[in-house]
Length: 92
Image (cartoon, rainbow, N blue to C red):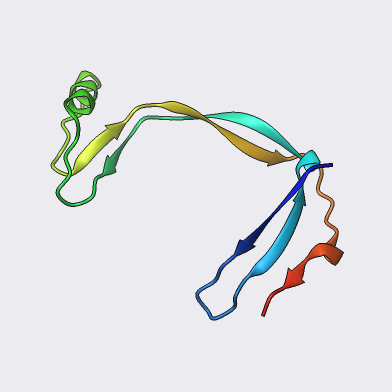
């Protein structure tokens, strides 16, 4: 059994929750993400490649925008919902 832990932070003054998850209860799944136009930080501009690719698709990119090409990513999907709350520790 392989497990991992992380702490979630909140801005309300609560310091966080230590969570333990069993990786055996998750499966990795490939997800397709469609291309999209996104904003760039101030002072940055889209690359010539992004502008040309967007133009091929019929988009005219405004200033401070770029086109993100479609891509694949892996996500964890819960396969067995079984929680053992004895492992949740509240950190104050």
